[in-house]
Length: 311
Image (cartoon, rainbow, N blue to C red; front, side, top):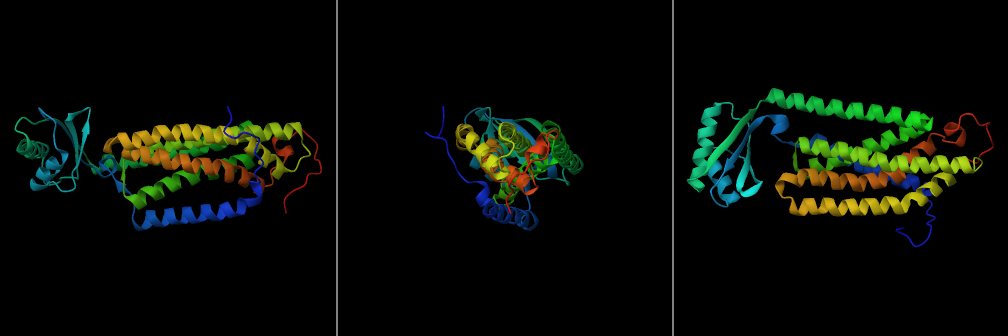
Protein backbone atom coordinates (compact mmCIF):
# COMPACT_ATOMS: atom_id res chain seq x y z
CA UNK A 1 0.00 0.00 0.00
CA UNK A 2 1.30 3.44 -0.94
CA UNK A 3 0.31 6.83 0.45
CA UNK A 4 0.91 8.50 -2.92
CA UNK A 5 -0.63 7.23 -6.17
CA UNK A 6 2.67 7.76 -8.00
CA UNK A 7 6.37 8.00 -7.18
CA UNK A 8 7.12 11.43 -5.78
CA UNK A 9 10.05 13.55 -6.95
CA UNK A 10 10.41 16.27 -4.32
CA UNK A 11 13.73 18.14 -4.32
CA UNK A 12 14.41 17.89 -0.60
CA UNK A 13 18.11 18.68 -0.76
CA UNK A 14 17.59 21.84 -2.84
CA UNK A 15 15.60 23.46 -0.03
CA UNK A 16 17.60 22.08 2.90
CA UNK A 17 19.04 25.45 3.93
CA UNK A 18 15.54 26.83 4.46
CA UNK A 19 14.77 23.96 6.82
CA UNK A 20 18.09 24.43 8.60
CA UNK A 21 16.89 27.94 9.39
CA UNK A 22 13.55 26.68 10.71
CA UNK A 23 15.30 24.09 12.89
CA UNK A 24 17.68 26.73 14.23
CA UNK A 25 14.76 29.00 15.18
CA UNK A 26 12.88 26.16 16.92
CA UNK A 27 15.96 24.93 18.79
CA UNK A 28 16.94 28.44 19.93
CA UNK A 29 13.35 29.08 21.08
CA UNK A 30 13.36 25.75 22.95
CA UNK A 31 16.66 26.53 24.70
CA UNK A 32 15.46 30.02 25.64
CA UNK A 33 12.28 28.49 27.11
CA UNK A 34 14.32 25.98 29.09
CA UNK A 35 16.51 28.70 30.60
CA UNK A 36 13.78 31.27 31.21
CA UNK A 37 10.79 29.14 32.25
CA UNK A 38 12.40 25.80 33.04
CA UNK A 39 10.68 22.45 33.29
CA UNK A 40 7.79 21.82 35.64
CA UNK A 41 9.53 18.91 37.35
CA UNK A 42 7.33 16.34 39.06
CA UNK A 43 8.16 14.86 42.44
CA UNK A 44 10.12 12.12 40.66
CA UNK A 45 12.87 14.75 40.40
CA UNK A 46 12.08 17.37 43.06
CA UNK A 47 10.99 15.05 45.86
CA UNK A 48 7.62 15.17 47.57
CA UNK A 49 4.77 13.00 48.80
CA UNK A 50 2.98 10.35 46.76
CA UNK A 51 -0.23 8.79 48.06
CA UNK A 52 -2.98 6.47 46.87
CA UNK A 53 -6.46 6.54 48.35
CA UNK A 54 -9.72 4.65 47.97
CA UNK A 55 -13.29 5.98 48.18
CA UNK A 56 -16.47 3.92 48.60
CA UNK A 57 -18.06 5.77 45.65
CA UNK A 58 -17.08 7.90 42.67
CA UNK A 59 -15.07 10.88 43.91
CA UNK A 60 -15.06 14.51 42.79
CA UNK A 61 -11.41 15.37 42.12
CA UNK A 62 -12.10 19.09 42.40
CA UNK A 63 -13.50 18.63 45.91
CA UNK A 64 -10.42 16.60 46.88
CA UNK A 65 -8.09 19.35 45.69
CA UNK A 66 -10.11 21.93 47.61
CA UNK A 67 -9.96 19.97 50.87
CA UNK A 68 -6.24 19.31 50.47
CA UNK A 69 -5.69 23.05 49.99
CA UNK A 70 -7.72 23.73 53.15
CA UNK A 71 -5.50 21.23 55.01
CA UNK A 72 -2.42 23.21 53.92
CA UNK A 73 -1.32 21.15 50.91
CA UNK A 74 -0.91 23.65 48.07
CA UNK A 75 -0.42 22.66 44.42
CA UNK A 76 -1.68 19.12 45.02
CA UNK A 77 -1.90 16.92 41.92
CA UNK A 78 -4.92 14.61 42.07
CA UNK A 79 -5.99 12.11 39.43
CA UNK A 80 -7.92 8.87 39.08
CA UNK A 81 -6.18 5.58 38.54
CA UNK A 82 -7.67 2.13 38.03
CA UNK A 83 -11.25 3.26 38.66
CA UNK A 84 -13.26 6.37 39.51
CA UNK A 85 -13.10 5.39 43.21
CA UNK A 86 -9.30 5.31 43.39
CA UNK A 87 -7.11 8.40 43.29
CA UNK A 88 -3.40 9.17 43.19
CA UNK A 89 -2.18 12.25 45.02
CA UNK A 90 1.14 14.04 44.60
CA UNK A 91 2.16 16.79 46.99
CA UNK A 92 5.17 19.12 47.16
CA UNK A 93 7.82 18.31 49.81
CA UNK A 94 6.61 18.66 53.41
CA UNK A 95 9.85 19.13 55.38
CA UNK A 96 8.10 20.23 58.58
CA UNK A 97 5.84 17.17 58.80
CA UNK A 98 6.69 13.58 59.49
CA UNK A 99 5.32 10.70 57.42
CA UNK A 100 2.60 9.84 59.92
CA UNK A 101 1.55 13.49 60.27
CA UNK A 102 1.25 13.83 56.50
CA UNK A 103 -0.71 10.56 56.35
CA UNK A 104 -3.16 11.66 59.04
CA UNK A 105 -3.67 15.13 57.59
CA UNK A 106 -4.24 13.80 54.05
CA UNK A 107 -6.68 11.17 55.30
CA UNK A 108 -8.56 13.79 57.32
CA UNK A 109 -8.87 16.01 54.23
CA UNK A 110 -10.15 13.10 52.15
CA UNK A 111 -12.72 12.12 54.80
CA UNK A 112 -14.07 15.67 54.61
CA UNK A 113 -15.03 14.73 51.03
CA UNK A 114 -16.29 11.25 51.91
CA UNK A 115 -16.16 9.75 55.43
CA UNK A 116 -15.34 6.32 54.01
CA UNK A 117 -12.12 7.44 52.32
CA UNK A 118 -8.88 5.68 53.30
CA UNK A 119 -5.25 6.29 52.42
CA UNK A 120 -3.94 2.95 51.20
CA UNK A 121 -0.36 3.92 50.51
CA UNK A 122 1.81 6.96 51.21
CA UNK A 123 5.49 7.39 50.42
CA UNK A 124 7.93 10.28 50.59
CA UNK A 125 10.43 10.84 47.79
CA UNK A 126 13.37 12.85 49.14
CA UNK A 127 15.23 15.49 47.10
CA UNK A 128 18.32 13.26 47.07
CA UNK A 129 16.39 10.45 45.36
CA UNK A 130 14.98 12.98 42.88
CA UNK A 131 18.50 14.22 42.11
CA UNK A 132 19.69 10.66 41.55
CA UNK A 133 16.83 10.03 39.13
CA UNK A 134 17.71 13.20 37.24
CA UNK A 135 21.33 12.07 36.94
CA UNK A 136 20.28 8.58 35.83
CA UNK A 137 18.04 10.06 33.13
CA UNK A 138 20.95 12.17 31.82
CA UNK A 139 23.27 9.15 31.77
CA UNK A 140 20.66 7.08 29.93
CA UNK A 141 20.38 9.73 27.23
CA UNK A 142 24.18 10.07 26.94
CA UNK A 143 24.75 6.32 26.54
CA UNK A 144 21.93 6.17 24.01
CA UNK A 145 23.54 8.83 21.81
CA UNK A 146 26.97 7.17 22.02
CA UNK A 147 25.66 3.74 21.06
CA UNK A 148 23.64 5.23 18.19
CA UNK A 149 26.77 6.92 16.80
CA UNK A 150 28.79 3.69 16.99
CA UNK A 151 25.97 1.58 15.50
CA UNK A 152 25.42 3.84 12.47
CA UNK A 153 29.18 4.23 11.87
CA UNK A 154 29.67 0.45 11.98
CA UNK A 155 26.65 -0.39 9.84
CA UNK A 156 27.20 2.21 7.11
CA UNK A 157 31.02 2.52 7.27
CA UNK A 158 31.08 6.29 7.64
CA UNK A 159 30.92 8.86 10.45
CA UNK A 160 29.08 11.25 8.10
CA UNK A 161 25.81 9.35 8.41
CA UNK A 162 26.40 8.88 12.14
CA UNK A 163 26.87 12.61 12.59
CA UNK A 164 23.66 13.34 10.69
CA UNK A 165 21.76 10.75 12.74
CA UNK A 166 23.04 12.18 16.05
CA UNK A 167 22.05 15.73 15.11
CA UNK A 168 18.58 14.47 14.16
CA UNK A 169 18.31 12.50 17.40
CA UNK A 170 19.31 15.57 19.44
CA UNK A 171 16.98 17.80 17.43
CA UNK A 172 13.84 15.90 18.45
CA UNK A 173 14.30 15.76 22.27
CA UNK A 174 15.29 19.45 22.38
CA UNK A 175 12.01 20.38 20.71
CA UNK A 176 10.11 18.13 23.12
CA UNK A 177 11.83 19.75 26.10
CA UNK A 178 11.10 23.19 24.66
CA UNK A 179 7.42 22.31 24.39
CA UNK A 180 7.32 21.13 28.01
CA UNK A 181 9.05 24.32 29.16
CA UNK A 182 6.56 26.45 27.22
CA UNK A 183 3.43 24.54 28.25
CA UNK A 184 4.61 23.80 31.82
CA UNK A 185 3.19 20.29 31.57
CA UNK A 186 4.45 18.16 34.46
CA UNK A 187 7.78 16.54 33.57
CA UNK A 188 8.17 13.11 35.18
CA UNK A 189 9.91 9.80 34.51
CA UNK A 190 7.14 8.76 32.10
CA UNK A 191 8.10 11.74 29.92
CA UNK A 192 11.76 10.66 30.04
CA UNK A 193 10.65 7.21 28.84
CA UNK A 194 8.64 8.84 26.04
CA UNK A 195 11.67 10.90 24.95
CA UNK A 196 13.83 7.76 24.78
CA UNK A 197 11.06 6.06 22.77
CA UNK A 198 10.98 9.06 20.41
CA UNK A 199 14.74 8.75 19.91
CA UNK A 200 14.39 5.08 18.97
CA UNK A 201 11.40 5.72 16.73
CA UNK A 202 13.12 8.60 14.92
CA UNK A 203 16.31 6.56 14.54
CA UNK A 204 14.36 3.73 12.96
CA UNK A 205 13.08 6.06 10.23
CA UNK A 206 16.56 7.44 9.72
CA UNK A 207 18.05 3.95 9.30
CA UNK A 208 15.36 3.07 6.74
CA UNK A 209 16.36 6.13 4.67
CA UNK A 210 20.07 5.33 5.10
CA UNK A 211 19.48 1.77 3.89
CA UNK A 212 17.84 3.12 0.74
CA UNK A 213 20.74 5.57 0.26
CA UNK A 214 23.17 2.66 0.39
CA UNK A 215 21.09 0.70 -2.13
CA UNK A 216 20.92 3.67 -4.52
CA UNK A 217 24.68 4.30 -4.27
CA UNK A 218 25.34 0.60 -4.92
CA UNK A 219 23.16 0.54 -8.04
CA UNK A 220 24.63 3.78 -9.47
CA UNK A 221 27.85 4.94 -7.87
CA UNK A 222 28.39 7.78 -10.36
CA UNK A 223 25.12 9.48 -9.48
CA UNK A 224 25.44 12.83 -7.68
CA UNK A 225 24.95 12.47 -3.90
CA UNK A 226 22.17 15.07 -3.73
CA UNK A 227 20.20 13.14 -6.36
CA UNK A 228 20.76 9.84 -4.51
CA UNK A 229 19.50 11.37 -1.27
CA UNK A 230 16.43 12.90 -2.95
CA UNK A 231 15.57 9.58 -4.60
CA UNK A 232 16.05 7.64 -1.37
CA UNK A 233 13.84 9.96 0.69
CA UNK A 234 11.13 10.00 -1.99
CA UNK A 235 11.14 6.20 -2.21
CA UNK A 236 10.62 5.85 1.53
CA UNK A 237 8.27 8.83 1.90
CA UNK A 238 5.03 6.83 1.68
CA UNK A 239 6.19 4.45 4.38
CA UNK A 240 7.31 7.32 6.61
CA UNK A 241 4.02 9.19 6.35
CA UNK A 242 1.80 6.13 6.76
CA UNK A 243 3.60 4.81 9.85
CA UNK A 244 3.64 8.24 11.47
CA UNK A 245 -0.05 8.89 10.75
CA UNK A 246 -1.12 5.51 12.20
CA UNK A 247 1.07 5.96 15.27
CA UNK A 248 -0.17 9.53 15.76
CA UNK A 249 -3.78 8.34 15.77
CA UNK A 250 -3.01 6.04 18.71
CA UNK A 251 -1.08 8.74 20.57
CA UNK A 252 -3.83 11.33 20.04
CA UNK A 253 -6.33 8.82 21.44
CA UNK A 254 -4.11 8.43 24.53
CA UNK A 255 -3.83 12.21 24.85
CA UNK A 256 -7.57 12.79 24.60
CA UNK A 257 -8.86 9.76 26.51
CA UNK A 258 -5.97 8.88 28.81
CA UNK A 259 -6.55 11.69 31.28
CA UNK A 260 -3.92 13.52 33.34
CA UNK A 261 -1.97 10.33 34.06
CA UNK A 262 -0.93 9.95 30.42
CA UNK A 263 -0.97 13.62 29.40
CA UNK A 264 2.78 14.25 29.62
CA UNK A 265 3.68 10.89 28.12
CA UNK A 266 1.29 11.40 25.18
CA UNK A 267 2.39 14.98 24.54
CA UNK A 268 6.05 13.97 24.44
CA UNK A 269 5.32 11.15 21.99
CA UNK A 270 3.17 13.33 19.71
CA UNK A 271 5.66 16.22 19.53
CA UNK A 272 8.49 13.72 19.08
CA UNK A 273 6.74 11.91 16.23
CA UNK A 274 6.12 15.18 14.36
CA UNK A 275 9.69 16.38 14.95
CA UNK A 276 11.10 12.96 14.04
CA UNK A 277 9.28 12.88 10.71
CA UNK A 278 10.78 16.24 9.82
CA UNK A 279 14.29 15.47 11.09
CA UNK A 280 14.57 12.10 9.32
CA UNK A 281 13.93 13.92 6.02
CA UNK A 282 15.63 17.28 6.40
CA UNK A 283 18.26 16.84 9.10
CA UNK A 284 19.98 13.44 9.10
CA UNK A 285 20.46 12.99 5.35
CA UNK A 286 21.05 16.67 4.60
CA UNK A 287 23.78 16.96 7.25
CA UNK A 288 25.51 13.89 5.80
CA UNK A 289 25.45 15.63 2.41
CA UNK A 290 26.97 18.77 3.93
CA UNK A 291 29.77 16.57 5.34
CA UNK A 292 30.63 15.45 1.81
CA UNK A 293 28.95 12.04 1.70
CA UNK A 294 29.76 10.04 -1.45
CA UNK A 295 29.47 6.41 -2.54
CA UNK A 296 33.09 5.67 -1.67
CA UNK A 297 32.43 6.53 1.99
CA UNK A 298 29.75 3.80 2.21
CA UNK A 299 31.69 1.42 -0.07
CA UNK A 300 35.32 2.20 0.86
CA UNK A 301 36.75 -0.48 -1.44
CA UNK A 302 35.62 1.20 -4.66
CA UNK A 303 37.90 3.51 -6.58
CA UNK A 304 37.27 7.22 -6.48
CA UNK A 305 35.04 8.33 -9.35
CA UNK A 306 34.11 11.72 -10.69
CA UNK A 307 30.96 12.70 -8.89
CA UNK A 308 29.10 15.95 -9.22
CA UNK A 309 28.79 17.68 -5.90
CA UNK A 310 26.59 20.53 -4.86
CA UNK A 311 28.48 23.83 -4.64
